[in-house]
Length: 617
Image (tube, rainbow, N blue to C red):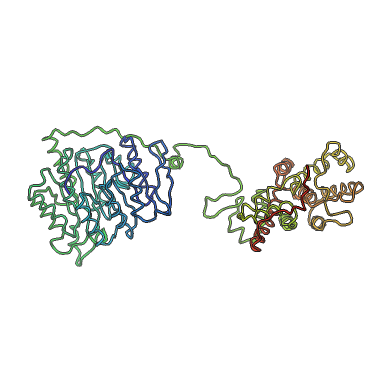
């Protein structure tokens, strides 16, 4: 393996299996280091495609996401992504241990990929051996499995390496130092980055080879690589008990292949304190398989081979400092001045910490879903269910922002039931039926019917309430009201029916009036509408109070008689269109029923008969 530097400020990666946090951390590190281009060129995410929005400093960027239903086969998908991003030579694999080997092998087979980092722990050993053999035969590098990754200080980092931005700044990883570091443990890497930053000029490159039995690259592989990098002046190695990987480094030191100082420590010396074999840390590596694999034996072998080995982990920091101080004296190294750049803080975090204030984009006063359960007008969903609230109660909460008395909410429910449908011949139902028979979906069929609701069909409730209220509040007699509307060229909303007559009243109107007279404290607006009807019937027998007029006038009585609404609030409710909303809600039930009916009957495309059309010039 040997060769030299793996990464630079121009290195770009493909990220397999989208994970927002590690990618954003990579991009934040890029900005911290002053990179001109993001280190993540593209994302490979089986099952979804398009672009993913992320931040590169203060700028929001869109990173391509590669995947289509056709390219679900990993090797085909990876090949396509590599072709789309030929400058990306690092493959960061966040796949699970079940699929990590196959996707990693696919990446290694691509001519553009030099380095593959496998994050998953527990990749089958046979698969890992095959990956190692292929990589070595093709001069490629595998970091992992079971790795957090690696970092080139001031240039490039893999995934979650070195943790948060605060930790990266604390460890001075935004600029290059002189120390090459390699460890089996990703977690301990963070600790050593901090330690090295305190007593030296910092890390030049750091690698966590991973904790599985067969690492894709070994401690000695990276030490020999560091030996070939001029900017690396010394190396720090952190091993673990178990396995014999450290002995390859011992041999390299004995054979004189390493010409730079090496400070090494093998963790796990406390294992001897336990009577039986104890496993530490990683799944199968961190346990001793005999005296040769003990931390004490490895530390002694490294010391005998020429590495600087402290007497304990606590003494490691001092050994690193002393070794670096000798280099400072010998090679005229100096501690770098540190001016850590500022990373723009995420807005959500800044708001929570009280550092900034930002305007909201939407105002909502009727519901809140931020707690453990949604609330309607401040009432938890569980309370609504436990107290047996009905549809009328929910409407009162979401539309009127208060709990109306039961007689009010029951009246709302009666209106919904009575207005749910009026047969297949009215314009709304007709449109819905025609659309459903054209093979359209439920929403399209429903909307086609709802779009007919307006001044001529079902939309007169608000107008009826508005004009009845205006006339009553002005103390106009029915004669003055009707004749005044006539002079203005306005038909009286809520009066008149195509079928019903004075001697054949609409049963729905009678039911509503009967309920209101029994339960409402006052029905002054309804009684006024009845007086208007008496006058209009003297003009024509079909000028009866229709269901729109009945609901409009009775809703005025509901609002005024409940004592829960002020006059301006009542005016707003009528003006905004609440009452037509009731008809829209109710009629949606019937329109949905007509849609299902036509589809259940498997009715063909509707064509209007010729004989029902007047063709004229």
